[in-house]
Length: 466
Image 1 (cartoon, rainbow, N blue to C red):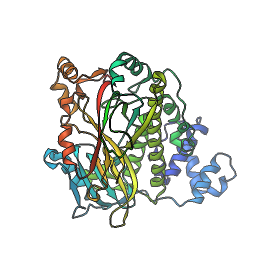
Image 2: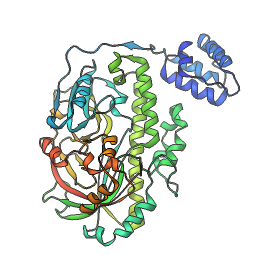
Image 3: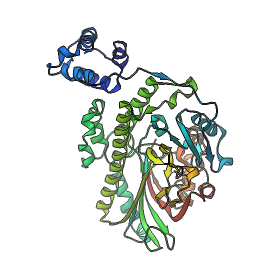
Image 4: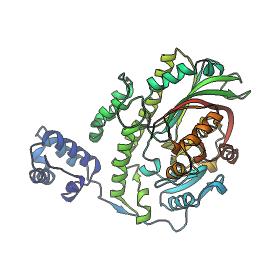
């Protein structure tokens, strides 16, 4: 088979995204020995006379889809609004101007209803990291981000905080043996989880080829600021978790949906940009209508990526606890790169995109990490309307990765870690504590968004050696 591309199909009238996906899947499997020209001739013929191919075992699937569904228009052009939709900024004096500018642009989209910028905000792609956007019946793949379902998961362990110090060598070894970071390789033991049996892998043609990657990467973590760490947690008296206010051992992880989420993000961002034409400087914020086939398909695959990210954390925590013979008392977890259906205070139904922001509905539990040498905060939401029921997802970067590299030496970072009584396995100076904003300032800026239920202090952490 030649190298058949989406644009080859749109030229001959295949404009429905799900149909294109179906055709590419069938072509790669059943028409391997056709040249591109032969394939295009055949597909043109099927498109023009679908009834004649309905009985054919292979071509009948394409013909049936053509007859059963009117093709979607290839694209629709939109102008930006003259006046931006309203949005509230928290901790604005510590947010760089470029992040605010990105948010300003997002609020001009004709589907934008309301927004909020969290105090950890900094420049991202499309929407700034720390940006929250409510859209009317539309989902914006690039406002969810590349790492769909990136999330925090915290297991409070049935041991006191002194356990970490007493068994530091064992914990260090467990992290080395039962976690894996980065794109290459995987864990030594094949991981099992019901997510791998999801019907969605079979329903969407381009996902089929991703399933083997999903199998290999299950229970592993990404690179950059993703981590798995043991630490001590101190819960406040009368916390809403319903646990005694004392110190416990705990396990905290930060990672996302790995290669699966990245492939879904790339694919549907392209679909959105092909079908929703915006002025050039806003093109990355192209959306998919929730009533369209592509919008429904993205929602299905985004949900799968989120569930896969959750499954990865479940395997990480289960593997480590089992290896160490530990018991979990409670798990707190949530996504911070995702889109949710929600209802605003005025009763309007919207799609809320949180790109690096923690859901914080009334009493909703979350985790807001600082840096490797500062505490992560266990919080419960206050359900603030102006913030679209959200809070920050961390301290937020104060320096780009390159700047962090230029401003810190390996020996300088080792000194900072030693002073904070933290052991780091892997990691790099790009993730040094000074590359992040001050978590106390960030927490202060969002007092009206969350209640503090406790603090987690990192002690033994593993990251990818970027």
